[in-house]
Image 1 (cartoon, rainbow, N blue to C red):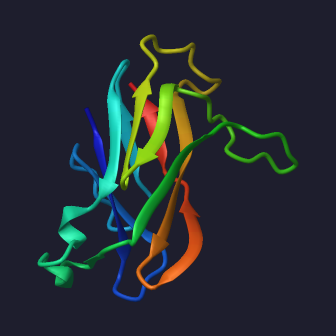
Image 2 (image 1 turned 90 degrees about the horizontal axis):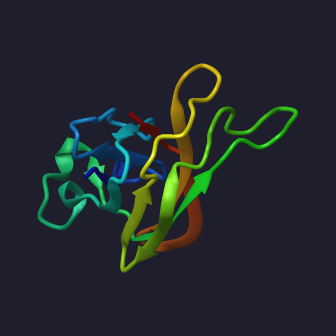
Length: 142
């Protein structure tokens, strides 16, 4: 069951730095996480970025994890999220800085091009700044 860890990239950064429990760590916000049928996916604030952690590694805390929202293909021009389909059976929901969602029990027919993936948006705020921000990583159903 994958967990996606959310922090910000750099002490004064406004973009996310994401990693997951599967060992994916691009050192930026360009994360794609593999999921299987019926997995429960969890999003949480990265413990590497919390007080007492080694911030010299480049992980700094966000203030609040406010939302996780699935994004499916939208018509264009230009198309937004091309090929992205709904692979969530339930959720995502966020409560007390933790997001959860369950992946479909049956893998859908693959998109043209052969993969089942969903873009999603992580909503967050930064310490001392209530401006709503978001970032759009991806889940791939294996």
